[in-house]
Length: 279
Image 1 (spheres, rainbow, N blue to C red):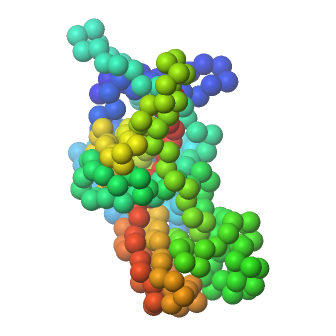
Image 2 (cartoon, rainbow, N blue to C red):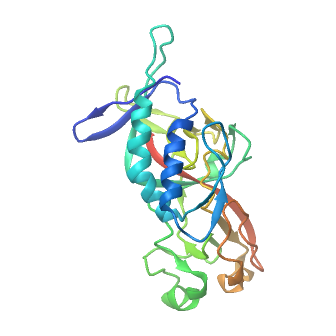
Image 3 (cartoon, helix red, strand yellow):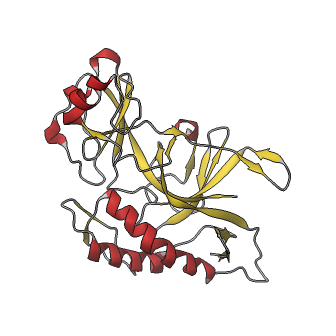
């Protein structure tokens, strides 16, 4: 609904006057591209709408990210420019800087909610953790035998570890920043905004605050969750080990819960693609 996109030399940023929006036209184009190009074994159904019909779509995280980087942003951002504010309905501008590569939020919350609390427990991967992961089947020889350091260089915590949908043990996400420094005022603002998407229909501004509250300006947590990306955190002390995993439980179908692992407590997290942040 009232959005504006701007470009400057050597800078990538865009301005949103009011993120609440339904990008079905952009989503339809992107869905068509994804349907044409993604040929992985797993599939999921995309909800139907007046402009996007449900169809089985096969995709992996890496290919989805590549598609987003090369097609979604160039298509999506010009569509933002088309919806600029009118004289009768001016709105404050929010400027976002687009990341050079997509980042990932691990989020907890009611999938049907558009706001809530608990963002202080959310995490952020600044790089795709999948390619840097180690398969469960290789835990002994590639992590345990190397003083709990993965081949990619990140440290494995036996008390608290993460697994993704293909059975790859991942690095632990860092804490999600929930405040920002305002250069104009010189003040630290106790909230931060990100532009997030599930690579389906909805792309929206996500506000997270220092007190842990969060709010989407469009859609629900489910709408901005990338369904093929599954992730879970496993804890449980000495009884919880990657060696207890049943390898037949992987890969996990898009949208499904991650499998239980004997001796472990499990917490599933939604994965959100992060395209940029407020500046």
